[in-house]
Image (cartoon, rainbow, N blue to C red):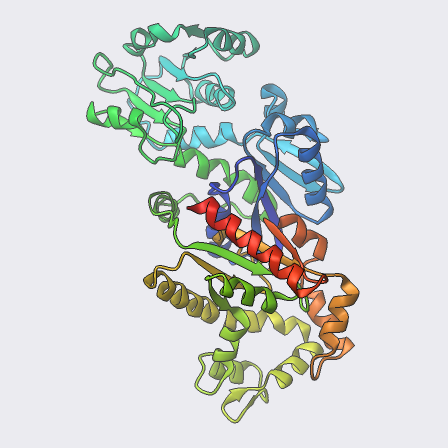
Length: 481
């Protein structure tokens, strides 16, 4: 666990969040180890406070915060940045010295994103902001910072726009919903800050007929990647931009603070996120199965298999790699002399070496993890070819290796610590020393339970545990059908 930087994104809903994918891309680019966990937190003050306290206590470096918690992130932080104090909302928390520090990087994110589409000769006389919701103040402040002389807000409920203008001096004026096209005639940029255009919301209908040819249309919505609003702008021949740019750029300051490196927003990252949005892969459902050693993952996997799920086991994948002719034999032989016997990796010899030299775990992981990843990818491809409804991937160090963002649902198997210890010490060749070494590499049990979507207790009877698993599996299938 040493050297890993743990982060999170908190919201409700949260399963759609792309933040874990952004952070995973940057961690790979900068050879950083860590994770970004997507954590569902109900729309309650108490739930948010408990979530933040747990993250801080579990040693997380920080968290991004999305709807509906941005105002809470401001209220329950110990120290606020100047921008947070100005806007009254925060989207980035940093935990240090037992305190919570709140920042708002949405302003920076929108500024940097809009700069990518603005051209040197563009006028900056008037910006029209559609919607007076949570993101509007940050967008309006960013427009003022960029140099737009007049920022006008319109909202379907006029009073909400007026309240916003009264609260923030950087908003120049408001206009009624029915008059927005009249204002649009003179606008240099129009930004949709409402939820209109997202799934389950009506489309934003804007008539661009009389707009300037130089008008820029921006939507902070990024799913779908091209909303009806942007499609209309495109049809009119206008420059346009979706919300992916803002999303990527607003993540930069947090990553920089938590990892000490300033990440780049690249076309490759945008392409990965677009692929994720356009091909979400709704079927099969990917279920991550994890838990500490001796908790009963193998037993749980058998029950999932009985229910019809396809099962991939990380330990079996490693066994294939360690066997004679396996892909890990040669590189392990070179790095760990004396651990290969008869053309295969001796797990006992390798285990003894790692107990004596625990820092070599990192060397081993660099060899094995990519090979295991290819084995897993090949299995998933075969299962998809068989039209599998669900694939359960049994991965003991799922959280520790920062892979949780790849799954639709995560099931943690747990049991009383004394039960777990007794089970493990019954295994041939297992000693207290080996067990302690294995446990030291694993996340604390209470943290795994905190991060899980579903928890199965295996210290009850086998029948009771199996019943829990069957209920969980059927609930998951129903959710994704």
